[in-house]
Image (cartoon, rainbow, N blue to C red; front, side, top):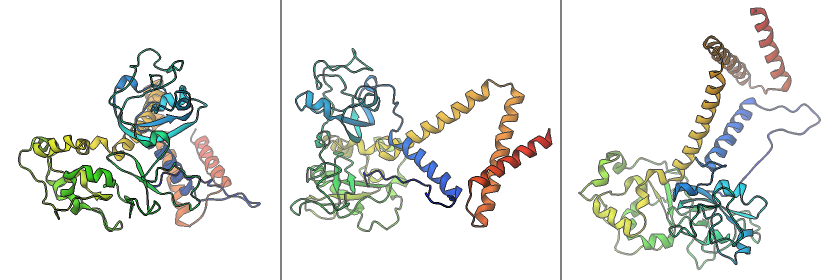
Length: 366
């Protein structure tokens, strides 16, 4: 997974009329909107998440400005606090972390700094929060920043360990350190770094799920298809596979379908709890689930806006608006399909002419 953000402008600058495929424009706009919604999940950008306790998953930031003023103590702040309490500060994006409670304004900050959104209700410290080197702006076994100003190779692809949630480079670390030989390439892939693999011997039983060919298609695991959603969590018969070897594993591994393949018997759950990996059984813990909540929130917001706009109209007008909208979408779909079938691009003049034709047809009806 590449942590870098890439952007480009879809319009060409030329002395001739700029043209482009409208399908490309629509697809790109939808992709931008979906990505923006996914990044922040279902987290509100105006409300501090502190009252929700230790949030299962949320995007976090480390304020480097405040860390300097507090003597180097690390802390994490939620999306809303990054915007309202730390505006103008130097912020380090941490991407998402699990089971974290917003620190903004607590004892990890200078005494005179208060959270603007929750100024009086926060505890002195959140003792269940976990802080890794990312909060200091460092990543991987090479302990370097991202992006690395000293790396001129433009090869800074990284992937996140699903256990410790640190990020790791692919094929560019010191030869004395474990390296990633490949990156997760499918939504069912789970990278677990060398340190976390070594600390989680239960996972050694699932070495057969190791991805060796990233181009191979992901197949649903037999355990996933056979396992009932809820009943299995109290299962008594152990379905843990036999190990492929007796040697301990001490290398980073990309597993495929790991979460849906894990045995959920009581014994395995107890071992996972002792090894601090019980969250692997929680389908809501995944980045994919978090991003889907963001997309769903955006879709619901759009639906609510439309519903509110229609609610102020009489019922007959509501019907007319909906019918008019469907007619507009149908004509636009036909218009674009015709252009696509002819392999033509759409210009500003084409769009203007199309809507003028719609207006003329409307005047003829009335």
